[in-house]
Length: 197
Image 1 (tube, helix red, strand yellow):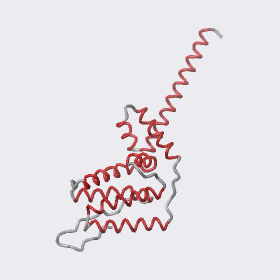
Image 2 (cartoon, helix red, strand yellow; image 1 turned 135 degrees about the vertical axis):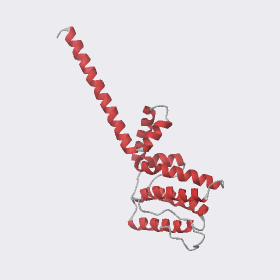
Image 3 (cartoon, rainbow, N blue to C red; image 1 turned 90 degrees about the horizontal axis):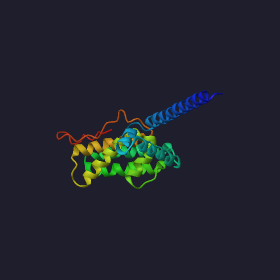
Image 4 (cartoon, helix red, strand yellow; image 1 turned 90 degrees about the vertical axis):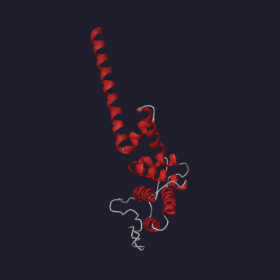
């Protein structure tokens, strides 16, 4: 083989290797986008670079793989569903307290499924691998709960917090949140309007 042919072969090999590397990176990126959905875009916006965000998301996947997640038994699912229904009914009479109760119920469900408790941002990171599409709801509910603790949340915001908690709650139970009715405020003319299911 002549020196020119060797150079051409080396260049072709380098170009092919570069194309393969680009294809691998693009495939990994597509897989991360598919798995994390809106959480992918959020991670990219929060990190210094797309590479750093993707590294963070792969690290979340690795940590998630180490968890021993367990599906709920049918009787546990039924207890949680009943607890949620009761919580929604209580909203009518005590919306501020109910938001705290909703947070506690969701936190208990998260723990019962096998996710570690603790810091909210750690919870978000662990949940993002399988529940990324409902994390915006959880973040919004958490923010309203914090405002509620400072006495700054309106009743409508509290209602929205319960709706947001419900989205993650249903996702963790494996339910579709479609068709659920958000908690209603009691109409001044009908004091017994507590149907919130």
